[in-house]
Length: 270
Image (cartoon, rainbow, N blue to C red; front, side, top):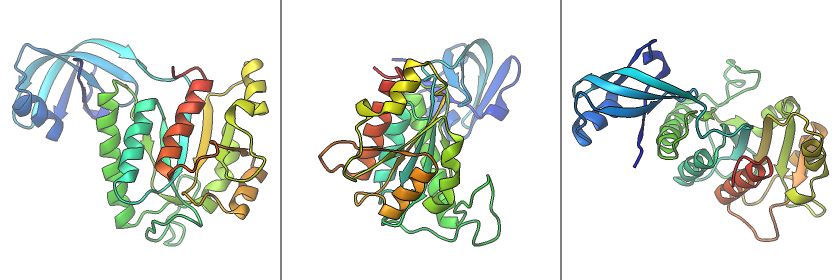
C-alpha cells in the first residue's frame, strides 16, 4: 500500500529534502525504513516526490529526489468550507473527512448559535489580520495547531499533495464581507424555499456556460442553523441558500455532505 510522508516545504531543496521530527521518527524507528529504500513524500503545496533515502537517524531522514509530480489527486476547484465549530473531537472528525474528500481550506466560524466559545478575536485585542478579525487567543491557537496535524495525517492517508489551509476561528459577522470574493458562495439553510444543489440555477448556469468556478465557498452553521439575520446578511453579500434535505444533520455531517455534493457537481468527485 502506498504511504505518503510529509516534509515541511522549507526543508525541500533542488535535488534533496530533509524530514525531521515525529515524521522522521515514524519512518526510521516505527516503519524501520533503511538507506537505499525509496519513499513517497508530499510537501503540502502540491508536489509529490519519489525519494531515495541517503541518511537517517531517530529524528531526521535525508534523501535524494528522484522524481516529482504536481497536484496529484487534487481537485481542479478550490473549495473553502466555512464551518461552525463543532464540540470536542467532532471538529477533528470534520477536518479529517473534509480533507479526504478534497476541501482546500477550512475556516472555523463562530455563529450566533454556535455552542463552542473561544477567546478574544484579533479585532478585540487590536491585532486584526488577513483582512478580517480572527480569534488568536491561546485556546484558538492550540486548537488550530491540532486541527492542522489532523489535516496533515488525512492528506497523507488520502494520497493528496496539497495540505488544506486551516484558518484561525473567526466570528461569522467578521467573515461576511469575504463572501463576495469567491466565484460562487453557497450557504446551508434550514429556511423554507431554499433550493437543493440540483435546483441551484446559478450553479447550473455557470457550469453550462463554462464560467470560472475555481474558488467556491460553502458555509455550514450549527445544528440550530444560521439565524435569520445571519442568512439575510449572507445573502446581501451574494450567498445562495441551499437545503441539504429534510433530515436534520449534525453540523459535522452537514459539512462533509455539502462538500461532497459540491465537488461532485463540479466533477471533482465520483
